[in-house]
Image 1 (cartoon, rainbow over the protein chains, first blue to last red):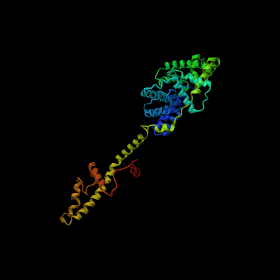
Image 2 (tube, rainbow over the protein chains, first blue to last red):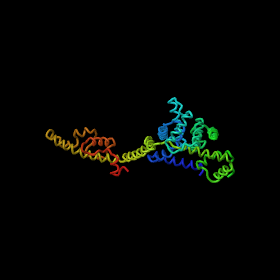
Image 3 (cartoon, each protein chain N blue to C red):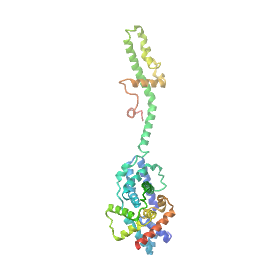
Image 4 (cartoon, rainbow over the protein chains, first blue to last red):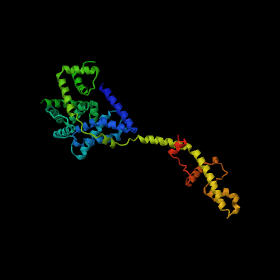
Length: 187
Length: 189
């Protein structure tokens, strides 16, 4: 199955579920949340928000569902949710006058570790620790683009929409991030 | 499919990781990786990153769903449509109801007038012949209604006034319709 086909199928499913929810079917809302909450939580977690992931994910869904009538389907629902989540994180960051998005490497590592602790199943062997450290040492923009690309599998176009940049810039950020991770792991 | 350049293969490694390649494209990428240890190492690294960062922080789906707003266009649209249909049906059926209401009022009003006239016989025996039609009660109704007038000749305003009078009478069913009335009498469909 090609990326285009699968993305198209997902988008079609999302549109159908949205229509059902707008028609009063609460199960459609549950299906949408179940489908998108995990990747959304992962993405929000990658922005270094610590223990606010759950709250931010919920706020994102509430805001998105409140504005679903404005969702025109030009992007995927998932990337639209990511965009909303990212703005919420930035808003919170501004409100608290504390740069939580541009966290220090130690904070980012702590965030990743806390997510891992919750899972309770990831073995902290040396190679994995290296990978985590390699990702953590990326610049915030590189880390965001790298995570969206590698972990969530978004296209450069979707990443550009989420991160408010261009497709070309997203591609450059990804390749720079990939290079930096390689160097860190091989060092 | 033509052979892919190294850059093109590199761009497709993430797609391969997410199982989004198929057919000739998948074969071409696999061939390229088999022939290029650098690409193979990069795919390995991508798998490692994906595995390490794939963990999901806990999310409470039920709590999220319960916090969601009610869709703007869900139930209200159906209810409004339904009400609009009922309202239209009610308007369509108002005229015969008003005619029926007028008939009831005329009958009851006439009976009351006759009863009142009998009570007044002692005071004004000479009025017996006229009281059935020209009583003060009738005048208070604000209309030129007599028992001899056919309800079919009444104007809409007169019928509305009659309907209002009926509503003021105790012991009579309301002429205001509701949904169940529509369903029961079959006129709301």
